[in-house]
Image (cartoon, rainbow, N blue to C red; front, side, top):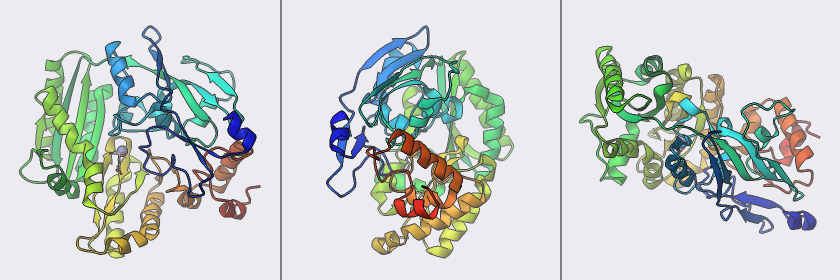
Length: 426
Ligand code: 2HG
Ligand code: ZN
């Protein structure tokens, strides 16, 4: 970084390269240097008494999950790319995933950071402290900054007790209103034991059958909405089974669910999770689609989806909103597949218009246009429309203070020059 600073070479930090918003890929100028963190791959220390792990940025997420398990601890961050994404990227994008409902996102799991600044200095902020009020919480600036302020090279992360048992259930529901009601009920019944509440819309189901024929959908009929619940139990397996059965019974009796299945073994639960975790790839294999990674108050989701589906149908008749995601956190992947037998290029050409339509609805319902994948290049300009100009100016001021030469990840996250002028950003 010191050399790049000396020669004024822009640097694009890159971890596992699994991002979905183009945050870790260079522009087409041929002038940007991609700096891989992959060889920073040591787990420096696991401190079970302090419940912390000190890890380098290039450690693959799954490797940390496994090391924590060996130490009889849980590192809860979990997402479909965990076999290849790295912790540096997880932190730089403030990754979410499937356990946010209980443990929070990457930001909530971080106690300290080590960061290389654009001039090549090393900030060693690896404090594993749960209380530390010594001024601005600088690590939080770097988390979610998508490599635009500094390069995260290591982190001190929180660990948790390993649950004694886990049980997964898949439930077929009458609709999204029922799903939100069930979420509320499950939160009340399971408390902190509810560690995942994922949602799959009916349009996703045929994609699984088409592209992952080995996966078995457990219900004869496809319900409008299917949810996957996970319970982590600190008593024992029989207790977990009992509690989850009660939730399922309630859902059936109250008319929220039409069918349900509880994972009978670890392998069975994994198979249920595979249905959820294969959706992103199934959509990629299906062909052209436009992604939206949005967050809303959970209570607003049924009305938002009805309104957004309606606008999409009017905009491109036959287009297929095949949404799924993390209902427990109010985070939907409102992805829209091109109409069957249409010209995919024409659909893609209208991508920005479709984004605008969906994001305007998101804003109308009080949501965010970027929940867990980051702004990167994909949503950088779109963000200018929805973020308050004062917030954008404050972000720009932070950028200027920490990276005055604009060497780190140019062209990502922050508005382009033209929009900055329009916003009177100096
Ligand atoms: C998931 O939840 C990922 O599976 C990917 O965040 C979402 O492909 C997507 O849009
Ligand atoms: Zn997701």
